[in-house]
Each structure stands twice: as structure tokens, then as C-alpha cells.
Length: 287
Image 1 (tube, one colour):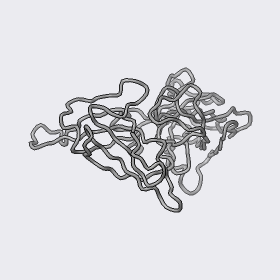
Image 2: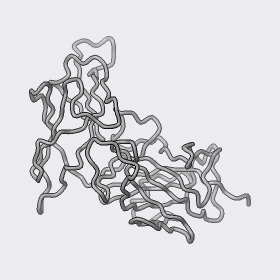
Image 3: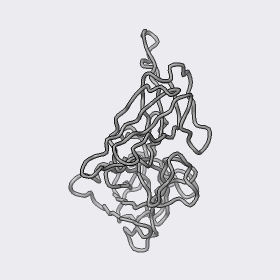
Image 4: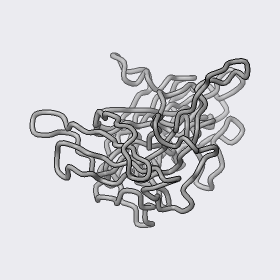
């Protein structure tokens, strides 16, 4: 899911127009987008739309001559190719209104572009560069993992993310994921350290208590006896992925979460070309 900002369409748009159902339409407020590419299928391929909304080009009431951009939040179709032989796919989005082309945006196709769901994410901020806001990780009952409701070793947690790319079985663009959602390979990295940055997992020299699991369909085993961890498209949603995480056994002497230690375990989810993660609190046995 990405948001693009264009001129030349939506001139009469004065308020957001949001898709009304779980399946996404290909036209909202008269605005439509198509994908064209150099690989097969070349298109034009209709692009599913989540929202169309106006954005004023300046926010100060003292400024004059301000204009409007049109924001369009959309799902990149699963049909978009990444490689064309030995080169990259040449792809672009064509935006039009009532059949008249208004803008063309060049794409740089990637296999994946992971972003963990974070506090404060909205349609206009999701898919920007990873922010410093805390990632959202929940217990199985949907309640947030916090310092007063920490995770327990061996517990299965749920992390939400976008941009994980194709699953093992193809999904239909713009269609809500069915209950029998296909899973996909997942690489999880665990760093038991206070307030660790997910980006540290990509730096040379792995941090202490670092462990990695590669899961195809069953068995993520950073410590003996762990259950399977996996990721899959989230049933009932378009473009959202669910990553199930089994909390590994913490090392001896791990500091508990408090006002200074906001997380004592950082978990990172990696695919072929990208990664992102979230810090969580794990309960520590009294010493």
C-alpha cells in the first residue's frame, strides 16, 4: 500500500473519499489509476484504490496563492513484475480522471518493502521511511504488549506489517484476503537488548543475544521447544500482513522494562530486499 500525490486530477475534491468495502474499487471520485510495465502482463492493469483526498500545498492561513494536490492511496498490483531478464522492469502508474490522463509516476519495482505498523500510522503517513514511533505488537487476544502487560517466553504474539510482497499462493489484487490466507517464508531476528534499534540488526557484528529463524511453513526454533512462527496475508484486509512471533527464552540477567527501558526485546522481520522491526517488553523472572 502506497500513497502518491499528483496535480491535474481531483480539482473539485474537497473532502476524502474512502473505499466502502473490504474489496477495493478501481475508481474513486472519478479518479482511476492503471499500471503499465515492460514485462508481461504489460497492461494497462487497473489499480485498486483505498482513498482519494485533497492536500493543501501550504498550511499557514497567512499565505496566499496556495494550491491543492490530490493524494491517492492504492495497492500496487501483485501483477507488477520485478525483473525483466537481466534488467529491471520499467513500470509506471498512469493517473486519470473521467478517462483523461492527468499524471504519470515512474515506479522502481522491488521484491518487498517492509514496514511494521506503528503508533500514529495513517493513510497519509504509512509507507514513509520507518519512524521512531513504537511498533504495534499484540497478544493473541488483540491487547497491546506493554510494560504492564509484557509478553511471556513461549507466547505467540502478532505483529502487523505492509510491503511484504507475494505470498506462496497468489492473491488477487484489491480483494480482501480470504480466511484460508496463504503463508510466506519469514526471517525473524531477535535481539534481547534494552531499547535496541531494529536497524542495528543489519549492521556488521551482530548484537548480543541475536538469533535468526528462517521458516517455510513450520518450525521457527531460536530456542528448543518453540512453536512455529509464520507470516501471512491478514484475512479480511487488502495489503496487510500478519506475522506470528513466538517469544524465545530470554537470557539470564535481562533488564525488565521500566521508565527508562521501553523494550528489552527487538524483533525484526526480513525478506529479500528489506526489513523492519519492533521493540517489545518481555516478562523477566525475579532474580
